[in-house]
Image (cartoon, rainbow, N blue to C red; front, side, top):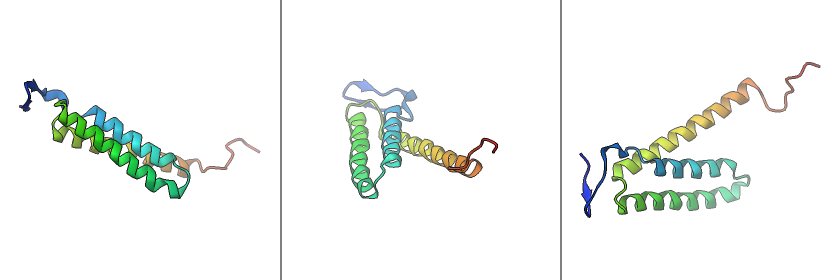
Length: 103
C-alpha cells in the first residue's frame, strides 16, 4: 500500500511515473540532437535540472512516491537506450551514404 500525504492517498497504480519517464526521454533526446559538443554539457545540466524538478514536484504534490519517480527515470533511460541501440543497428544494416537503388 502507498502512503497518504496531506489527506491525499497515492494509488497503487502509480508506478512508474509517466511524467518522470517523459521528462527523462525528453532530456535524453535533446542530448542526442544537440549538434555542437560544447553545447552538450549545458543541455545536460539544464535537462538534469528539469527532470529533477519534475520529480521533486511529483513527490511534493503527492502525485507519486519517490520510488515511482525513480522508476520513471529508469524506464525513460531504458527507452532512450533502446532507441540508440536501434539507430546503431540500422546504421550497420543500412550504412549512411550508401544508396539502396541499383546502379
